[in-house]
Image (cartoon, rainbow, N blue to C red; front, side, top):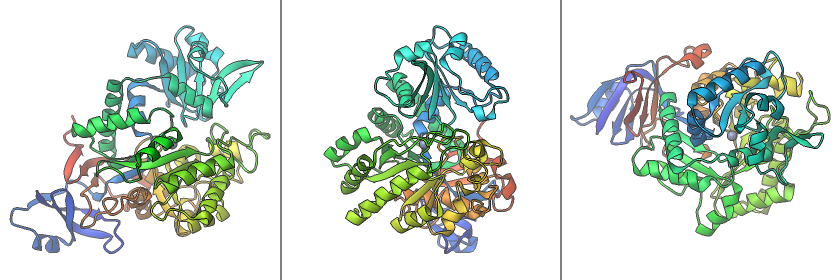
Amino acid sequence: MEKIIHGAKIYTMDPATPRVEAVRIVNRRVESAGTLEEVTGTASEKAEIVELDGESLLPGFVDAHVHFLDLGLDDLYWLDLSAAASKEELFQRLEEGAKRTGREGWVLGTGWDESKWEDDGSFPDRYELDRVFPDRPVALGRVDMHTFSVNSPALELIDLKGVRGAKKRGGAYTGVLTEDASLEVRKAVNYGRDELKRGLRRAVEAAGEKGVTSIHQMAVQPGRFEGYLRTYQALLRNEELRVRSCLYFTEDYLDSAIHLGLESGFGGDRLTLGGLKLFSDGSIGSRSALLKEPYADCEDEYGMQIHPHGELLDLIKRADENGLQVAVHAIGDGAIEEVVSCFEELEAAGRNPRVSHRIEHAVMATDEQARRMGDLGLVISAQPNFTGNWGLPGDMYEERLGSDRLPTLNRFEFFRRSGLKLAFGSDGMPFGPLYGVHWAVNAPFESARMEPYEAVKAYTLGGAKAAGTEDEVGSIEPGKYADFVLLDRDPMEEPEKIKDMDVKATVLGGETVYSQDKKS
Ligand SMILES: [Zn+2]
């Protein structure tokens, strides 16, 4: 297969030639990029010439932090409650939705965000949910998935013995479950092998639609990795895995991985092992992100530390020694402090030079912490969509943290200028890089606001670097896979409209895996 593509503005993310006119693809890889004349000059006579039907062509997006398979499961089996404008409407949608799906057993919902409700801004509790569903178990995940609201029948199925984060009132569970307790909710809801496959197929479809050609699947739930890995392998065998997938496992699998001698990067071009995913705190929305100063709307609350220092350090050290990359979730400045100091101790003790590590989110990183992260060479895996969701004046971040701290959050441009390795991901809130790129470019504060080219770079090459796949993907360069996304407009020309742009086509290894025109 040999093709020459041209006719759109081609942005390569290669600093040597940021813009080219044409690209020649041979088999699955980019063979040359340059002016149409240059590229045609090196082509054989059989080369097919394709004129692109779109405004701009970018490298395929790399979503560096997404619970990918879970997206598909959520889409198939969980009701979307994100559009509820009030608590009252949430209950209505839940009742109607449960009738519509006609499924037995669990009533599952996700996406609710009380900070957007106009009536009652409190988390739904078991008594409120019991009024709607007295008999069927109900579990509703808050938009950040760090808090779940469940009813009484659900509480009977969830094992909360010795688990932190289950709120109580007068000695009884309120049905509001955060952090460790929220993980128990997902544990109680099980999926069969076929359900998992359907979920992953749905997620792969969504990747095509959103122009995503690589994903980093972050694990959340202990005990699930083997089921996930089997599902990815099943799709790979069937040639259905049309997105390059890099998988991160939870800490309960660390011993097994070490025992098997698995190292980061194991696998092939479609399916590779990322490494170990750890949590050091929760989220700002759930007031479980670990802060140095208390929450503005709850003065004795500082959030939650998931691992004591020694335990976190030990996990990081053992992974590192055994060639496994670590990706640590840290949102609050208290948690970032904890994680950075662990990596400093690792560095001092002698880090494995073959692996580089990453901090997920780093929402509240201070100037000083950013400098230390830079010295350590850590990747910052950030989510610019959070800015659009919660970072505008008057939104949830300001409510939880106050107006003084608001401009200090998610400072993407500051990170970039400080020379930090920046990778972008969606965390599935919502899935879709154009929305994230939009908010990096249109962020309300200068220290966050990026040039469109730089934001796209963080969502492509930045993600590739975070998983060590930058020699294969992330930019349009000779030798790399021909992974592209074709857009109907040009993000560099109309930066204020990025979130409304359409993906016209997605190309993975030279093969069109999604085309808007073919969709009917
Ligand atoms: Zn996440």
